[in-house]
Amino acid sequence: MLLGLSQRSGARVTRPCWLPAAVLLAPSLAFLIAFTYWPVLRVLGQSLIVGRFTDARLLGLDNYRRLFADPHFARAASNNALYAAGTIVPGLTLGLLFALALRESNRWTAVMRTLLVMPLMIPLVAAAALFSFIFLPGGGLIDFYLGRFGLAMTNWLGDPDLALGSIIAITVWKNAGYYMLFFLAGLAAVPQELVDAARIDGAGALRRLCHVTLPMLGPTFGFVVPIALVNALTQVDHVVTMTQGGPSDATTLLLYYIYQQMAQNYDLGLAAAATVVSVAALLGLSLVSFRALERGVYYAS
Amino acid sequence: MRRGLEAKWRLIGLIGVSAVALIWAAPFLWMAVVSVRPGVPIDIASLTPSGPFSFKNFSEAWRSGNFPLWYLNTFLMCGGILAVQLVTASMAGYAFARLSFRGRETLFTAFLLQLLLIPALLIVPNVATLVSLHLYDHLLGIMAPYFVSAFGTFLMRQTFRAIPRDYEEAAMLDGAGVFALIRHVLVPLARPGLVAFAIVSVTAHWNEFLWPLIAVSSPSSQVLTVGLASFTSGAEAGSAWGIVAAGTLLVAAPLLLLFLIFQRRFVSSFVFSGIK
Image (cartoon, rainbow over all chains, first blue to last red; front, side, top):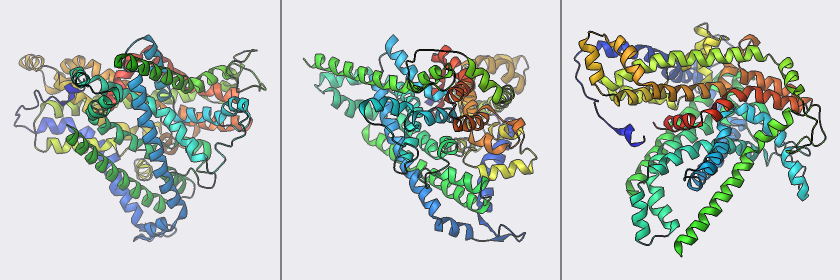
């Protein structure tokens, strides 16, 4: 399936008339312009409008000045960087380990895979509802079982030092199985002859993994990393319902900050400026990760 | 020697992952167990309690939230999005797969930008757009940004490309136009791709929260996730965890059940969804 996607069969037929293509693409383009391209320009414009309480629409960089002077925004940006690193690295590592351990297909591995993928199927707000109880100090699921070892009463969501970690744990729980699916597909596409050849050459399991299997998974990383990046910037449902960014800004993430400025403080200028910065960061990071991974794949092959 | 050692490590890995998988399943187990325990039992966190059990929490949850309306809205939203997406994605997918025109590759790349610039990130300008289109606070407003899907277009392009041209040529000789060709020849042949897309699309929109929360303000247009959030915040405040679990199960059950029944289909669809 993976290989079939890059085929180019039948891509070229010359039809002199452009009209059919225009008619077929028009509906899609209309919606893309309205809800993908135009919004980017619009939010740029919104971020430059200053004077929120007057009708005078002055243009300027005032919103950006306020944004970069806002300690809440700085905290949201640094939290989000931690959140991205804390969800992407363990999430992908676990996904890869799950896939390596469960790559053989039998009844048992099928059941284990199902258990690991199940969190993907429920809404993040449903996960948040469950974890509100799991993290409940004293009587919650974790403390109930940790209490038997004399460790209890940890305020997982109320302690500013632990809250972001708890939010990260929920995201890892929810996404690791999703990433596992891609690694399973990637592993299935690694030619067995290559692994066997390395084995005959005397390479141990770890060396086969590092020098044969992982480099062959380059393309898999190539699309999983951007997906994980988008997730790290856009999955904030649990922050909205569980912590509201608290305690004392410990779990404020960029999109939550945007939501807060927009829906609670009615400060559209600040929300727009924060959106522009976030979108720029996402596009930049995606491009960099894509390039870096591409180069990694190139050197490895 | 080495083979025996490797087999041992394989087994250790399998046991380790199985232990993690059981931890992964614990929240689901707890949800199921506590949802059928009435009241607030003292050992409410126990995963292996001894009765009494009843479905009282479900009736309570059903009464305190407007579940019929939330289900209806969610069905309408997911169904509406999917129906329009299938049309736009088939049309655009055909254009990218079979027609040649200037700037085709550039335009395709521009389509793929949508995979990064998802509506939840662009809430500020998108709400403004909904307001100016008079779609704010309507279900249609939640759906509108999703009426085109870059992923769907990509998937249909790949699926159409894999179909031999002979079918189309035969249909064209019979005098079929482009639309008839897509509708009656290609789409029926592309069913596996369409099913994969439908699964990914419905899962994504059934579970989405932030955009439906922002695009709608009146309770009559709320979907399940938004309803659940307001419902649980009330029940949690009263420590009614059994009711929280029952409500959560009501929201998550339809997709979870479909997933458990059609696992293979779901898994292959999701793997497809990551391939850009």
